[in-house]
Amino acid sequence: MSKEQKDEYYIWTAKYTPNEKGMDKYYFIVSNGSDVKAYGDDDGLYGKGKADELGKVMYYGLNVYLNDFKTPDWMKNAVIYHIFPDRFYNGDRNNDYAQKLARGFLPYEFYDDWYAIPEIPSIENNDGYKGTKGDGEWCNEMYGGDIRELLKS
Image 1: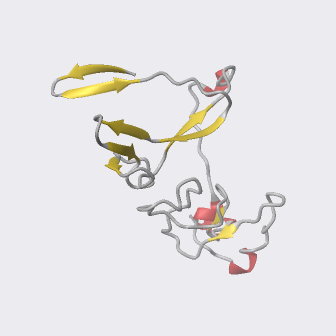
Image 2: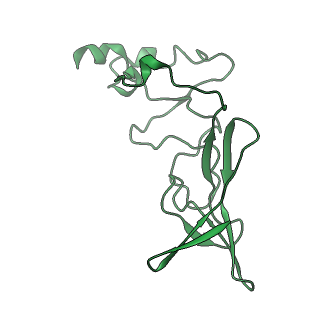
Image 3: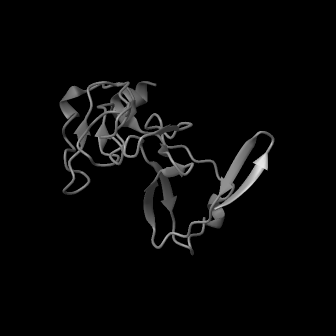
């Protein structure tokens, strides 16, 4: 690591080259020679961070892409709208569980609380985590909204 002073602060810089694509998790270990602390995420939502004892901070996350990943030319200046009917009002409760296994073997996780923070499986067991503790799977939450109410909007 290299250190640079900027005003009254020190800025530490390191280079990291991941070996494969995926989600890397990390926190920092800081020592003054006699005391050791960990510095990591403070709120489970990639906040400003906090220092604490080893094992008592949450991980930060880093998405790692393939070296040859390229954004398609048509996408570079595009505007995209994602419409998720599931996040509209639940106009027909009879169809809430119709797609339990639409993603194959992985079932959806149905939420009753519209305002629930979706789970973050990689950190949901850490102290201070404020999201929903769910089934440990990414992005399989369903809220029950449907096209009937989308068409009314």
